[in-house]
Length: 237
Image (cartoon, rainbow, N blue to C red; front, side, top):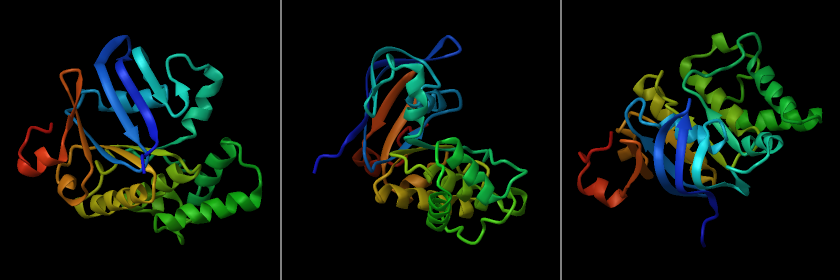
């Protein structure tokens, strides 16, 4: 069965602060994919991710994300586009003066949820999905780094997104804890949600196979899984 195309870029240039960061991007992303986004600091990984939800400008070419024409969409449509994404930040960005449950409730109410029972049910569901069902009463400072990142993933899942964007999600975690997080994201992709993960850790590529996309010299390159399997030392970053 053919997978649904979620993102399609043709001849796209991406800009940050009036500087072109990536040029002539041709890219298709489909439902249920697990994608590694590799590249050195400053190579454009974050700018690419931000362009998907209209935070980094697309200057040229054809850019479709879901059913939106990114270059021509109205400002009033942007919040609806962004609800189709779940975003996992490296530095958590949890509200430190609220419990886990209150953090998640805040996001749901901010995105239009009103029914108290539905809110409670959704919070219970995402906490269970990330293995944190008993942690709703905790304050962020009472959680380990790995636990906080699981809450961030739960927050990203609240509105049942089509795509999760994870920008260096294991950067502040020890290898064992980071591995648990990548495994969780991989399982989410197997359940049908596309996951795009920017990372510097090449060790994950052997443990969790996925598409490999590299940012380098203002360009985007795809490295086939066959090429990587034949030569794991291939230039990835």
